[in-house]
Length: 147
View 1 (tube, rainbow, N blue to C red):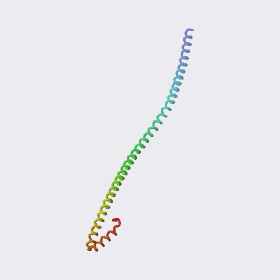
View 2: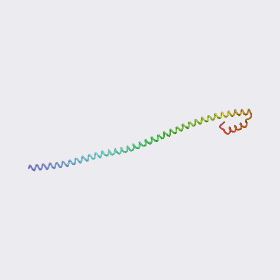
View 3: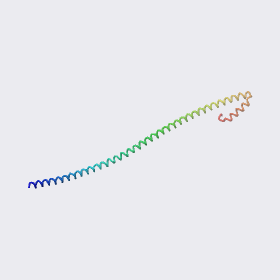
View 4: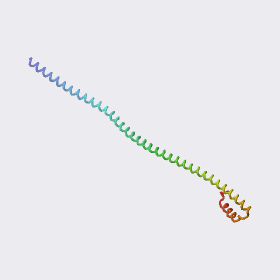
């Protein structure tokens, strides 16, 4: 009887051990599934964040290229405007030079007219300058800006 009780006890103990082992394996499997599910959930978020970061990096690179090109274009425009400004300044200088020359030419014209009138007056009073007077009249009529 004692032996049968011991055998029965060992049998029940082995059965409990086996049930416990089955439960332990089920618990391990359930915890592995839970862990895998949590990791998958986290991985989806991490993967999305990675893709977003990749997209942001690409857009930042494009923005940097665009900004660099814009800076180059702006620099070229500034150089063009500076050249245009210099050309306008030079044009203004030429215009002032032309006005100065025109004023000098008017002064020379007036001086030549006065000299011509004075020489004509002296020639008419002496009566000997008809040939010179004719050549001077011809040159004065050939240059209409002289009057």
